[in-house]
Length: 73
Image (cartoon, rainbow, N blue to C red; front, side, top):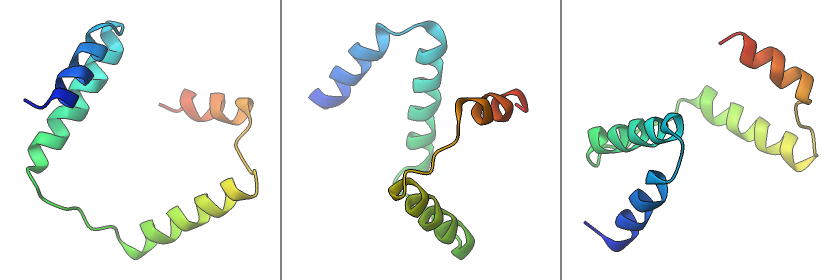
């Protein structure tokens, strides 16, 4: 195990259980990929470019918009 991974795991141990679970899921996803590279679709690339352009212009969702979005989940 690398030193950086050890440091990350030590830091995650200090987090609340919910955040620890999220970190665990992320690690399992990375491990499952095992060197495989995902390819983005043209639509995903265009969406990412659009989002970056909006961020550059300072166009962000309001707290109210985010609250409405999270309630859907």
